[in-house]
Image 1 (spheres, rainbow, N blue to C red):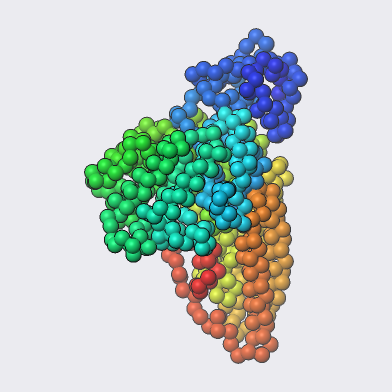
Image 2 (cartoon, rainbow, N blue to C red):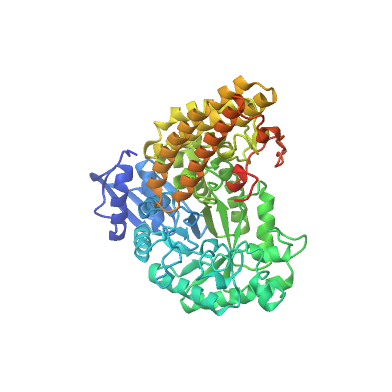
Length: 614
């Protein structure tokens, strides 16, 4: 990212110098020039010309780096103000991929140059608790030293690292260990009212005090759908679930207060218990009984990554205001449904959501970067969405200009990553797809998703391979992500209609065509190997090694299954068997098409590969 800039930074405050020097490797600028750079903290962010150079003004430290990158890109005479008090990003480090410290540091630099001031690391059990060896065992958990290193590095850029953990549900990774089974209520939900549960939570908070300088914390507590209905029900009988939730929340807040933390909580459980499991506003105001149990010292975070109408966000914000005046909002940078990001969808929903937040007076914003079901998509793949959110916060809409100055790559070029999923070629800005993951894992003989394949998809995927190749050489340090997407798309162009063609040949009793199609399988297996190598390189560049064993098993299992399918087909084609039972079955439309007549998305690997139990 070569920038035309040559500065004398000797007049900068000492606390800004380290950050400027850290950016040199990313932006390739000189610090031996005659253009004098000064800085002043005041009530507005911007750049103004001085007699010997330029002065950057900022309201918070991270804004200095946002304006600095603008100055390097030739932007001058700027005044801007963030519409929000805090602007943050949450990185998922719990879905098998724990980001390397070096990768988090790179993220910190990028976020500062966009204007973000907060970073959350979502860690369910992936942080070290000294007296709990099975907590995060073999999961790549962060050591205390690693967290401190991240916190100290982020402070250089004025970014506050805030712990984001779970204190009720989503604790599935620890449920396998005998140590924790006594304090599990149901599935991944901790057992409320058990002393040992609160001993563990106390240890969590003690660890936070030893690692983080921030005394803000996100305590999670979302999606605890079955709270109070497992072991708790056995021990206490049926209890009002609001009372159960409140009892637990009150206890967690007491522990947090003991260690000096102020808490934020995902808001959905207050709605789900009042609205028959739904996270949406009721037709009338929320019941007073719900409002009465929302603690005054708790911030509710309304999270929403799904709505395509600004009015939906406005209604939910209004519903939250019936409960409390301490509200923050979390949007989504979609990278959690497969190997490719959904930036187009994310950008358009982010625009609606942040505009609704501005108009409704919401002052704290978080962009989540989840990694559900294996964290297959690069953490950096959603940079266009994060740039969009930052620019929207500052009242700007030229995302392309902002992206190029911050990331050093063309916005449209980077968004070509979506081509791996783009077989529909529709321009509906609110739809996404993970068809690349579906085609990859759809079985050759029991292809649950054969019914969604259309004849034109193969041609489109081949075209998308060429498009990805045409931009890859312009993507600089992120080329490795594009190489992964090229290999995946090339593989799917070969594999997407394999099951459809096999079934058609079988029904036609065309054994020659069956054998010819089966002979493509070794080519497909070679393409899986090629994809595996690129994907592994991507993983190793960004994440700790723990968790990739799942990808080894998934992709290795895919290869073995294809080899077995070929054996079955060849045996039939050569007359050694009289039928292929799997191909005797009709493929039913297992999942509904959307209103455009297409199928776009199923997130879960276990629902892609088989209808049988895993």
